[in-house]
Length: 150
Image (cartoon, rainbow, N blue to C red; front, side, top):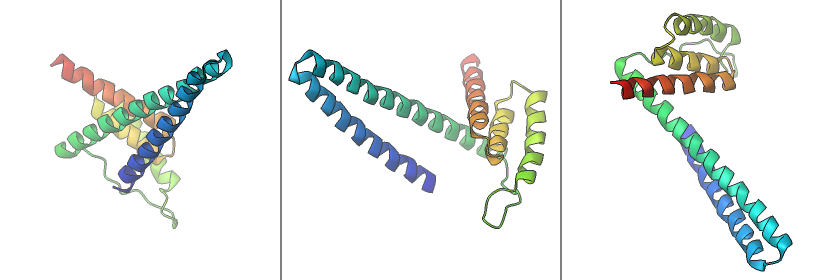
C-alpha cells in the first residue's frame, strides 16, 4: 500500500510540474518573438514526453497488478519466503537460487505468462530491475495475446 501511495503522490507532483512547465512554454509562445516561440515550443515538448512516460508507466503497473491479482486468485503467486539480511534486504544467494528455478520454468514453457511473471519477481528479488521489467512486459504481452486469441 505504501508503494501505491508513493506512486500516486509522485504522479500528482509530476502532473503539477507538467502544468507549470507547460504554462511557461505557452507564456513564451505568446510573447511572440521568434526566439521565445522556439523556446516555448521546446519547453512544451518536455511535459508532452513526461505525460507520455507517466501514462506508459501507469499502464504497465496496472497491467502487472492485474496479472498479480489473477495469479493470486489461482493460487500461483510466488511466496515471499526468501532469507533476509539483518537490514531486511533479500539475501542475494537465496534470490539467485530461486531465480535459477524460475528461469528454468520460463525456458521450459516460454508461452506461459505465469512463468514469466514469476521470473520477473525473481529478477526483482535479485535486484535486476531492467530484466524484471522486460520479463513482466513479456508476461503482459503473453497474457494479452492469450486473451485476444480466445
